[in-house]
Length: 70
Image (tube, rainbow, N blue to C red; front, side, top):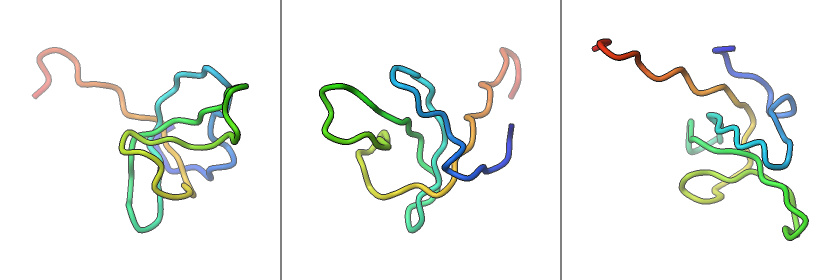
């Protein structure tokens, strides 16, 4: 899957540990994940730079380059 998908279809399981690319209007594409925990007040999205808005779309991160690819 290499195209943007609606945020409603993004993985949202507790302890998923799936990092995805989130599209947040006014910010662009940011790496993030969904968090849910019995200790959390709210479920929601988290990004590597902290929460900055509600994402509208998501995409799997591309595979890392293979050794020797430049």
